[in-house]
Amino acid sequence: MDVLAHQHLATLRAQAARLERYGGALADEAAALRTTIQALEETLAISAATTETLRQERDQERSRFNAILDHLPIGLLLVDVATSAITHYNPQATELLGHGILDTSDLDDFTHYHAIHPDGRPYTSAEYPLAKVLAGHGVQDVDVWYHMGSGSARLLHVMAAPIYDMAGALIMAVATFVDVTAHHQAAQERQHLLRQTQAAQNQAEAERAHLHRLLEQAPAAICIVQGPDYRYTLANDIYCRLLGRRRSEVEGQFVRAVFPEYVGQGVFQTLDGVWTTGEVYSGQEERLQVARALDGALEERYFNFIYAPIHESEGGITHIFAHGVEVTALVVAREEAQTAVQMRDQFLSVAAHELRTPLTTLLGYAELLYRRAERDLTSNEANRRAFIKLVSQAQRLRMLVDTLLDVTRMDFGLLRLNLHSLDLYALTLRVVEEVRITLHIHALELVCDTTSMLVVGDAVRLEQVIYNLIQNAIKYSMQGGAITVQLQEQGEQVCLTVTDQGIGIPVEELPHLFERFVRVIRPGIAHIGGMGLGLFVVQDIVTLHGGSVTVRSTEGVGSTFTVCLPREGPGSSNGDTNVMAPSITPP
Image (cartoon, rainbow, N blue to C red; front, side):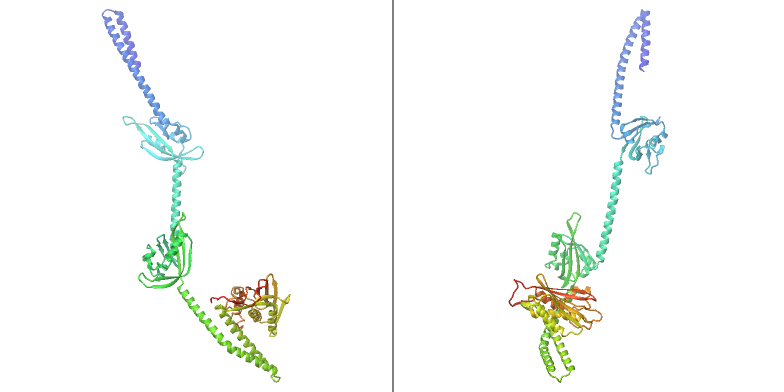
């Protein structure tokens, strides 16, 4: 337009010049034409200045627009509809794609790019979001995996949209995209974490349900209470039946409301102790007054209880687990047994006292008849053997009675020791010689390196210990054999051992050997007499002397009993001293 205007002005100037050459009246027309030309020139000058300003403003606006596009924090592409060529892109686009912008002249050229499906298949040209917009499919809002040159893939969120002119014709398409790989990975990690959390919750629920079933089916009374006000959260059937309540009356209720009779019986003090200290409480045979129903009469019952705190993950106590077993029948049976034992002991004590007097008389007359038979030359051998047997059995019977009396004295703490200095060797030698003359198939031997071993003790009671150990060795050596009694000093102690070659003692019976009424039971030895009190009395007497008694035994080989007593020293008492045995609670 500017060129044409200048061409027309040039023509008008030439025409004005021709008119001026003709002069005359044409000179006035030439002057008027010059005035018009000047006005047109001024108009053109103003128009040219305005056009340049508009052009400069348009260029500045385009520069500002391009600068804005280039500084967007997202990738951007502009595509011309007519040519399918990319007319503009920003630096973020090349950075996100990992390469420069590729030339495109038609839709098929989009396959030069590297979009891939999640399964690794490359996009076809028609699948690219810009291609869909150019094909008239409207706005596209999708996530696209893009293969990078390093072999990795990047997830791009693409928004592609059409651009229309004033007449509504599609002239361009624009695509923006951002890297959402980290967001996608974070979302996947969140999903994985959610799945793990859900799996853990499911497992915890399953374990909780399994634990609940175990508690329900456990053969004991079990409940769980929530503190600190002790509300039942679980009570199994055994617990409810044991305490005479229905589950609906227990679960969800406060302990004080369900069992008001517990107040003042120490139950809540125990729960408070577990709650505040976090320590497990274990109670044995605790007496509790319990009503079989809410309005029932109280009954005295006994329970073994365990209260254990349940901690939350942060360490605080939230609940208390209670486990209970009723032992009322056991306690009653034991009390009845103890009563029976006391009656038995009283009977044995009375019987022993009542038997001792006539037995002493019987033994006295038996010994008198035996001495007379020995002096009577007309008495035959059969009579003498009969008197010997009579005296022997009477002595044995007196020993049993004395043992029963000793056990009774021990039970009531009435066994007294008359302590004084004595020679254990001389005492042992006398017992060995008295027993030796009665033996027929056993060889009894005393072994000692010295002829004097002083201890402080009760001669009568220590003689009883030595005699019981030797008789025990004889009793369980039915086939005869050697029995060795040995005395030796071991530091500050004097030790006496009795070793036999008898049947031995089973290993499982050794821990109970010194208990009352315990006897070795084996096939073929049921005929061996005894009440199982001899070793019990031996241990008690030795213990009162401050000593100890032990046993080693091999079944089928023999046994060795060892008694160790304190040797008499400067601090030992040389005068007579009475020592009373402590009372022993019968089993």
